[in-house]
Image (cartoon, rainbow, N blue to C red; front, side):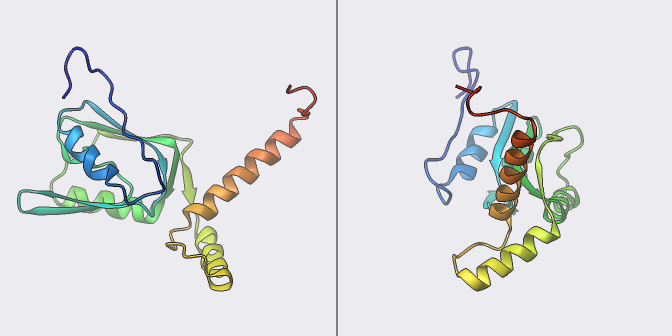
Length: 161
């Protein structure tokens, strides 16, 4: 798949999920140097089977299962720290070496306990069908913070033509 003519390959979904992106990335990452997850939340997930072992991944890119692949989690990723570290610990316990191979952007966003409480309350009153992972709630908070920072900067829409 990767040769002198193919130095970069991007997998992008055309809908919100359940497309098989994770499984495709797993197949492609076997011969990749780097796998980057650039966005998405803790509500994602896929199962990878290697030999007799089954791995269920929600946040960490499946490239981590291939020893020569480095995985990056970018600033558009929404991380549930409790789930992330649980997933990381489970991989280490099963003999997957992650040291120096899993890098997380210092601008990735965290799901806080408050986001989960708000998500459950919203679901209870609106019945919109969330996964309960609070990724949407965190994204809403992120955009509100960005809008607030923009407003505080004094930039006007007249200047930004």
